Image (cartoon, rainbow, N blue to C red; front, top):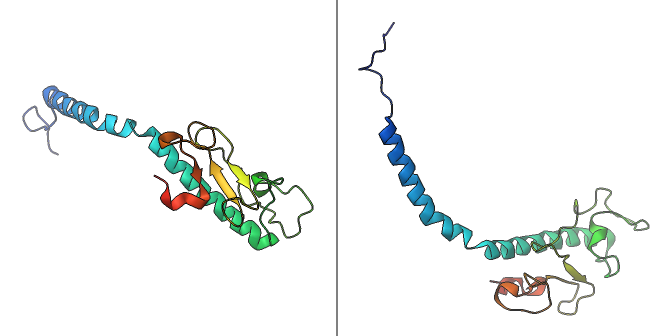
Amino acid sequence: MKKYTKHNFKAFTLLELMIVIVILGLLATIVMPKILNRPEQARRTKALVEIRNIESALALFKTDIGRFPTTSEGLAVLASNPGGINGYNSDGYLKKVPLDPWGNTYIYISPGLNSKDYDLESYGKDGENGGTNDGADIENWNLDQQP
């Protein structure tokens, strides 16, 4: 059995640990501001992803029912059957209809004004139709041109 003494036991000293902590702190002060200065970009990306997910649910709804939900049925019909819809998937098409990243409902119009089947959009940070930069709308008919 090997006996451990003061001389053959390897460990970090307090000074070495303090140096590592200081280096990690310096790295954090350099990297964190770059990550934290992009919350709006992250919200806009989340809205794009959610619109794509809702579009997938709408496509499944159309496959089962033969049509897209009407404007009056809205997106809520993707989460629960209001009754009287033949062919409706008993599990629904979404667990729940998400709010956009700014806490507003997604705008759904069918038939669409800007696209043939439906319009689906978020009004963005400002919550109003139109806007520029961070307040610009995120629209399904224009997704490929979104920032």
